[in-house]
Amino acid sequence: MRVRFPSVGVCTRIVAALLCIMTIEAAHGAATPAPQPSNAISLPRAKVILPAGWERQTPTSAMRAAQAVIPGAGGPGELTIFFFGEGQGGGVDANIARWTSQVDPGPRGVPTRQSFTVGPFKITWVELAGTLKPGTMGMGPSAPQPNTRVLGAVVEGPGGPWFFRATGPDKTIAAQREAFLGMLRSIEAN
Image 1 (cartoon, rainbow, N blue to C red):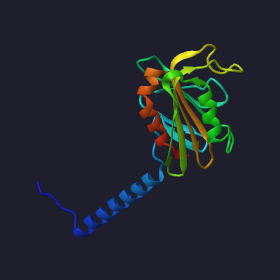
Image 2: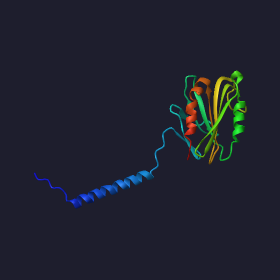
Image 3: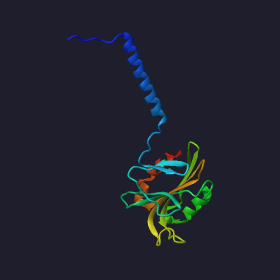
Image 4: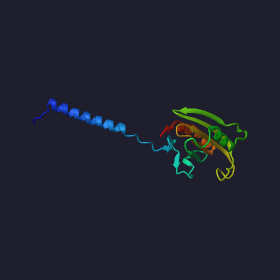
């Protein structure tokens, strides 16, 4: 059996055609948006990545942009994200003062408040621990909730602000603090 090899000219054309196909495929792939992680939460004009193990839920109120269950040893906690429209929902100080007034810290002391930036976003967050007071106007718990921890954040940026709040048993939310902050650090413009 005799094997015939193509001429150099034919080989050159084949290589050129393969390079052309690879270039077209690479260009097409670059134009195709990357798939979103399954735990990405799209908000109006922003998105965040929900921490692993947190279970997204359908919001129970039209005021909520998103919500999730936070698992933990102390029992489940809840994440709520609010967006009231660009420039709406009140300022950072007013929201932190409202969240602070909802928790009686008892002998635990004062809340922890810090800020950081991620790209064009300024994030101010607060950590509160104590007894969550009964809600007013049909919102919040109907009875005092001792041993509760609240992590609240106001995210300012183009198209914002957005309001994030993790509430639940102290043991659960304290253990999920870094996951909450990691979620905030994942924010991107949408």
